[in-house]
Image 1 (cartoon, helix red, strand yellow):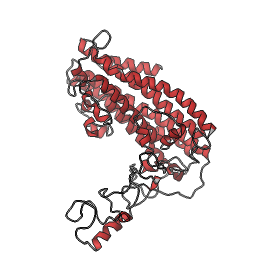
Image 2 (tube, helix red, strand yellow):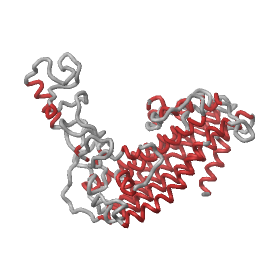
Image 3 (cartoon, helix red, strand yellow):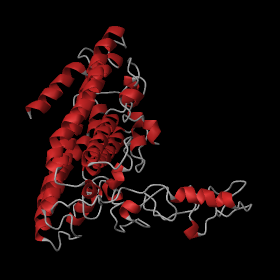
Image 4 (cartoon, rainbow, N blue to C red):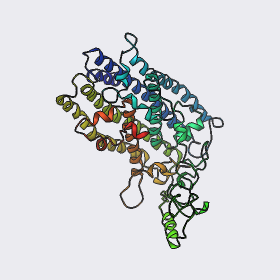
Length: 445
């Protein structure tokens, strides 16, 4: 609690100058957004992580598809989860009220002009927030809609971090019967669990592939003409359709002979997900201990990556939106903390991985990857670069999870402060190089 109060106190000093009604209103608005977002992440993220960690302790968690309806252990966890998520929903409701309060006239609100709240160049850039919640209708100049969109975007971002840390979280929470406020983001991540869930055409778990012919695709859709892979089992002869050589039905316009066979042969030898390594499997309690350690470590890393970057952007806002008007001295002083964030980020992740690995020592890489009887990191591992030779070890898989969560933390800042990327672009830092996961809102459209 003291840490959160100290954080908000610091933002009170650095976000915007107190002088001037406009600057004061923007300062109070920005602090309110940061405080509400921080409270939401603290309550919702922590509650979901505890739910998954407790469910992982149940004997049926990794070995079956038991649910709260037929397993007493899972039923007990479900009851506690529902209670803890109630507080998270209240925090979400407060987050949704922030925009309206910012633009409401004083004394009830902060008196921020709508133009300053939405303006991309000289305000808080909430005109771009709709890019982060394409499933919602966000009316222009409606601060309430902007905050509701921000709530949905942060929920989806929180889910992405949770699934990066616990790939079977979506499956476990579904089996607990836990209702979420994310608009279906976590339910969508059930793709890859090897079970045919609502809205999926197929799901073969780690066998899902966007490169192998006649395989279920990684978005759990059936192979189709136009997916870039020749699928002989579906009668396809070529890809892509609608070209000089390939018609709209993926049939050859001109017989290609050996060339067509060569294309199919190359597709067929694309390497698949790593298989079991043959070593002794860890018992369920070891899997649970490893999963709990990863959840604890990644949750801490998420906060310790996100908060310094928020403070960095808040200092830049003081220079760029306040009366200093982008003075070189102000920007130079504000840039130094941002450079420190870059320097500290990788060290934080390495230390977090080092603390976690001993708790996963008994778990084989195969069990870490296995989506059916293990922790299910196969899908995430497929997107992490691995330049070394040979098969990845347990440390590589765990490090991949922490890297993905740190990336989600940077992305969260763009959803909390849509102006973050543009403000960082005003410094000597290259935001694309320094913070590659701090997305530009337009890029998500």
